[in-house]
Amino acid sequence: MLIDWSQRIIQTKIVYYGPAMSGKTESIRALFHHLNILSRLESIETTSGRTLFFDYGPIELKHGEWTLQIHIWSATGQDYYAETRSTVLAGTDGIVFVADSSPNLLNENLRCWEELNGFFGTRLVNNIPVVFALNKRDIWPTISRFDFINSLRLNGSSLIFETVATQGTFTVEILQEIIRKILLESSLAQPKRIGT
Ligand SMILES: Nc1nc2c(ncn2[C@@H]2O[C@H](COP(=O)(O)OP(=O)(O)OP(=O)(O)O)[C@@H](O)[C@H]2O)c(=O)[nH]1
Ligand SMILES: [Mg+2]
Image: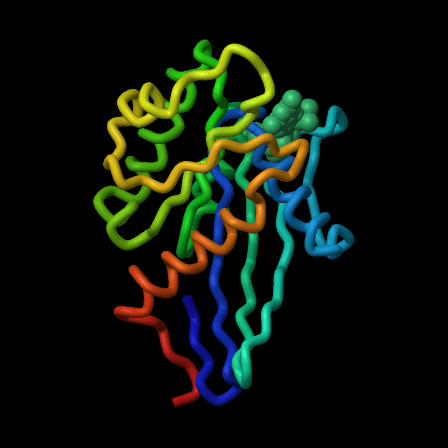
């Protein structure tokens, strides 16, 4: 997170991460659609509409003299392009982990969660907050929240939203929570300061 005290601007980066086809792009599209800024979203896609490298879009919120610039990214879940994921993750302040609710994909969720832990180590959750979107709740059968927590060996206090990205459920709430966690629980302890 960067804080420019002279311009009163806070910049933060959030990455939507998760296994292939779990709904990362759809979640971001729903968010930008809800905020009426869909045209600001850029996607680098394959010809079949899969994310090739990333989706990226900026969101700007004003509060008094201060401006919060939120840089939203998604990484591709396709293993063929796995090398691009570390590039997208660099410098992130918070993660929205978009998991697939299918029981058949529990292992994929786990593999992806372990990959993320491998990338950040103990900084994940402790310094880089995570909010979970347990997505595709409209496609039966779905795993229970309990099984999801157990499978990924998550802390019982983990923040998990049950979502249907194609219907835009909880998109704004997820953004609010990850921003709240970033501002309150992590990076403010040692922000990079500019303009002082
Ligand atoms: N029914 C249903 N379909 C969904 C949901 N979320 C995403 N999809 C669909 O699932 C497919 C994959 O969604 P994407 O958002 O492209 O998935 P992704 O995680 O960005 O995929 P990669 O970038 O390739 O890793 C698309 O056809 C979406 O429309 C959901 O909650 N319910
Ligand atoms: Mg995608």
